[in-house]
Image (cartoon, helix red, strand yellow):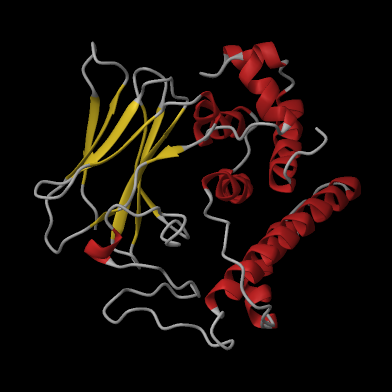
Length: 289
């Protein structure tokens, strides 16, 4: 696993531990999930980011709550989709309180639960893992704040009239209709999104519609795709946003549409995945709140 991204390595280590807990071989794991033996080899080896549905399936087989693993998966997914990337900026001092907010949830994960705690060796193992995640979280906070404070160390104001989450410090690059056609990673609309729709299509591809309330914009993404697959996201009266899988590199990654800015009182959205010109598209409707 030489050369693997640190976020992938952390996630893969946890997935291997979960697989060992189940007592299943990789062949047996493939038989109990919707993913092949070769796919699991790549997922557990840390060379390919597994779809969230695959990770969730393994968590269920290992009787593992998904919250902690979801955090690791989101960090790894951010490096793949480009949401973790920021433009070069002057180095700024990161306030201790911001790092503390990032590390605090991981400290809670590392703390033993009430009642009969784990064996001493188990407590030590979880502590090392939790602090590894804390380091990655702190790094993400530092990079994001550096991009935000690129003007003299002062955070840029969020456009008036936009909802502001309690601890978000990100400045988004567009709002509403100004976002249409832009990349969610470049505009930072891909940071801290909400998932409006999460489906496993009949063909085996995963499909999600995501929404950022700061940007008031949505986008759709798919994985487990095939060459020629076309994903579209539409709202009546607005230009349809689409993306087509046209390279083999995209087969092992998330493929997502450009942003679609929402209008006040807009109609329901329609996300469709067309697998070929000879088969009907699989479509889902969703409303952004």
